[in-house]
Length: 198
Image (cartoon, rainbow, N blue to C red; front, side, top):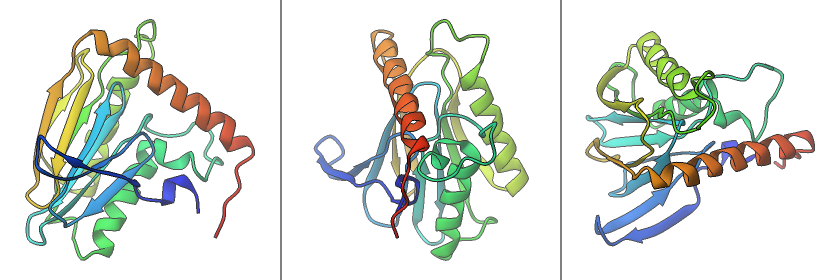
């Protein structure tokens, strides 16, 4: 099974929120109706949080780029692209009984944290993509914290749909940008010799 198809495995007890927590990183998503909090840290990446208020379930993804220029790339790298990450999240919610008409979205990230790469506008491209995707799917955006220069820590409560976004200190920008670059290099190296187990 590829990394993209496996939900986030990192669980811990969050003493601040006093409940079980799941941490996701780029290329991952998590859907649940449990009384958990899903957390992630974003730089230029974007996370979409989808919530079904009738069923009390929701999920979050974390993606790096809107789409892959080479449409032939598949496998573990797939969920780092917004088009795949959004489809994985949406399809999992629909499998659990949700409908697009009931879903509400909250979207976060897209900060310009990669110094020297302002001409690429990765964060702005991610933000524009998530807006367009949700509009096309007919999913209402109930809240957002996008763009600017700040990295963010996001906490999403899938049962209630509540979401919190905390802007991180400028000193954290370099560390987050470095992690995003390392993750991308690791995926690129792994994609060349990837093996899918089933």
